[in-house]
Amino acid sequence: TTITYCAAIDLGATSGRVILGAWSKNRLKLTAVHRFPNTFRTLDCNDYWEIGALWHEIQTGLRKAAAALPRGAKLASVGVDTWGVDYALVNDTGRLVFPVHAYRDNRTQAGLKTLGGTRAALERVYAATGIPNVFYNSSLQLAETIAACPAITDLATRCLFLPDYFNYLLSGRMANELTIASTTQLLDVHSCDWSRAALDYFRVPAQWLGKPVLAGTKLGTVRGIPELKSTRVIAVPGHDTACAYDAMPASPDGTDLFLSSGTWSLVGFESDTPVLGPDALAARVANERIGDGRYRPLTNVIGMWLLERTMLDLGPNARPKNPAAWDKLIADAAKLPPSKHLINTADPALANPPSMKAVIDAQIRRKKGAPPKNVVGYMRLICDSLGRGHADAMRAFERMTGRKFKRILIVGGGSRSPLLCQTTADAASIPVVSFNLEGTAVGNIANQLIALKAVKDLPSFRHHLTAHLEKKVYNPKK
Ligand code: LFR
Image 1 (cartoon, rainbow, N blue to C red):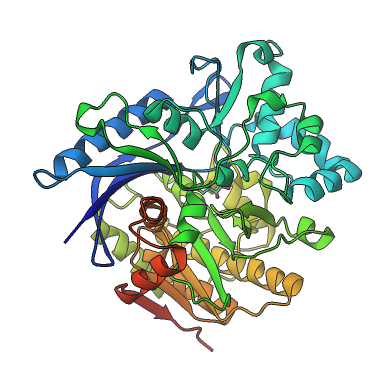
Image 2 (cartoon, helix red, strand yellow):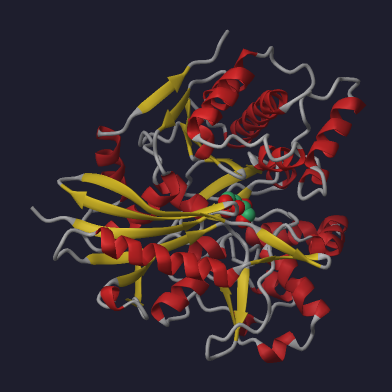
């Protein structure tokens, strides 16, 4: 029997991993060969990723993947996905000519207000790109970089979004990939190329960007790691959320709503057409793309970031030290009564505050409630509030599209929280189905297998995946 080995490099904003996949007899076996934390660092008033540290972890992970292969076996390919929107500016030789900012940096606040305050421009940009005005957009970030450092337009010749940049470091080829391009607010919503109108509005030099390649494009072979010199670098959907959506064991009739739950909760679905117009803009629907060019209209609900940050404020002992401690925390929170007052998850003050706890407490006090007393209480409050946020996003989609969703499929870190699954099912009044699935890595590997012709296409991958998947159904409590 032939076994095809692929490695997924999957970088999230708070953690990263390198996962080895072995595909044989229509089954995927995963081994997490390397896991590492990720964080941005604040220098003066700005936030930056530690890009060299991330590259080091990627290389360490790939060496571990090579070492984990059985004797004589070869790693066929690697693929990279990361969180959305962030980028590296480089010159023709690939040299970094600007530090890599983190999207939580509040340097985009002025641009956000300008675009938000000019109704006509806002509508024009939305009609052109299908992406709402959100603080982290690459468009606003690039505009700020160019305004703050005008000389950058002489220094930089290419803009590579983070998966593109790591693909370049791996393979030596510079290419912009479609799904990550679709997170920028610079891609034309009706084609698979950049939007002239958006580039002009944000004054981004068109020559910085290459026509996006589709997922499955073979970029080259791995440089710099002798054990992997014949391993291909394949452009997978570079956006982690696109990978997570590809891994959804969805029923083919389109009645499943997708929820990828991590730092952010990404609530959306797959569609042949974008969802546009004033209601979509008001609901902040982002028409991001699937690797093949179709659409995944989604809303970003703030996600487990609320908990990540609140735990920092609660001190070193608030964060569970192992999986059993996490389970206990979640179980204890589930025993508390449902929260009387919920967090308004759309409050911009939650994006990157000096103290998350202070912002949450202030919100609850404004509603004349009492803030939680401990981490168990915050867990309960955050899960109740996210459940409500997920359900609101679903109902908005139903109103706009006339669809009726029958199930919510959840993957990612939050899928391991019975409390979050239950609060979501209760608020949405439909079952939530959680999968024991490293969604982003699975979607990443699926795209490599398809490019290598080990799997026919995405529907057949999902079909095989569904056959062996452990799932848990949370029915809404009446
Ligand atoms: C999730 C994610 C979201 C994106 C946010 C910022 O990891 O990619 O989809 O909106 O991070 O990039």
